[in-house]
Every structure is written in C-alpha cells, then in structure tokens.
Length: 96
Image 1 (tube, rainbow, N blue to C red):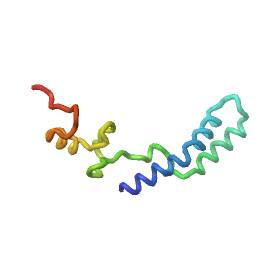
Image 2 (cartoon, helix red, strand yellow):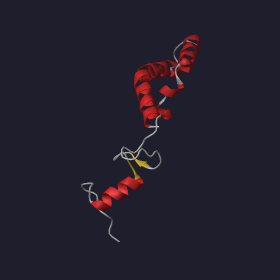
Image 3 (cartoon, rainbow, N blue to C red):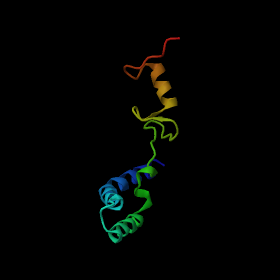
C-alpha cells in the first residue's frame, strides 16, 4: 500500500498545477460558458488517482494507515510506544 500511496502522491504533484488552472477557469463567472464547459470536460479527463483526496497518510514506521498523527507521521500506537520509551524529544506523559 505504501507504493500505491507514493504513486498517488507523485501523480498529484504532476497534475496539481493543471488541475488548479482548470478549476480557476471553471469557477470564473466572468468567462464565456463554452470555455468554462471545455475546462470542466478537460478536468474530468484527468486521472482520478491524481486527486489530492486519494492520498492517504501512512505511518513511516509501520505503514499503518489509520489514526496517523500528521505532525509526527506516526500512528497513535507507534507514537505511544516511542513516547513511553522517551525516544521523542519534548513529549511527556500528562500529569494525572
């Protein structure tokens, strides 16, 4: 799954500027309707895998895709394990 996610991220980076330009044309109310329609058709022809909503965060240690803390890029389980060992600087257990 990590390779698939990497491929999606690369595809997003490749098509990001074109997708944003087409979206700007589609949402511009001052342009001609036929031009806006053409931009919408071109946008729909782009690969679905190049959309940002297809990209998922994965834990860099375990590859787990659920419950990933985006700042640390670790799953909650791995974060808890590393924090309890003291491997993460600046992270402490909360006082009870």
